[in-house]
Image (tube, rainbow, N blue to C red; front, side):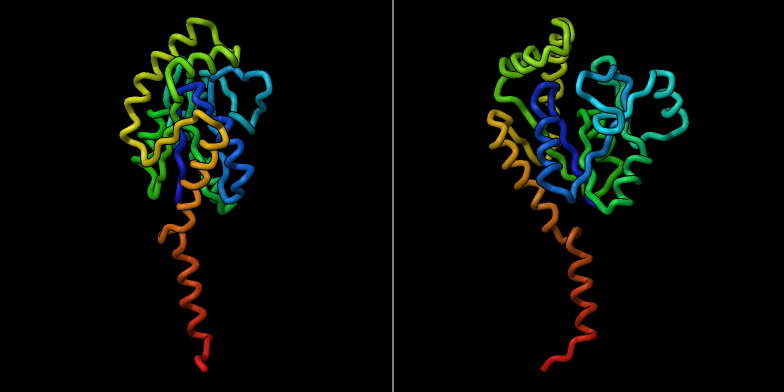
Length: 205
């Protein structure tokens, strides 16, 4: 099974791009993360995240429920094995919205992974976007910008880089990347095997 990892510094526009991608590409399904972060206005349980307390999260860690987990910006995030199994049952390709730590863990545990790193056109634009969404304090914005520098250095570990300067252009580029997945030999195996099986029932005239 293929998997798609999408990472980005906070404020680069990753969430918006993923939401639009999923609407246009029903073969993919969003892997919902579990987090200790407080729910923001407009977010919904089981859509954006599964929200749990710190104690609940640590219990899940201890019981081995996570495929990957990490501490990011003073909150904990993780993807459960149960969530990945849910997507497999739907015969969909999972899209993981994870930070660079989570991406590293997933690459070590999953096969046929395609990874995409979304970057802003500049640090100045990243700061502008963070301030525009009005969900963080000045201190939190400073922390996120500082963390963004370290995250950007991880770009060498990703297969594709998309600059989100123009939303539609970035979306078109992401769509082009995802379309290559369904044409890969590993994904098309079942199509070719079915074609070969049909040969047995076909009489050449």
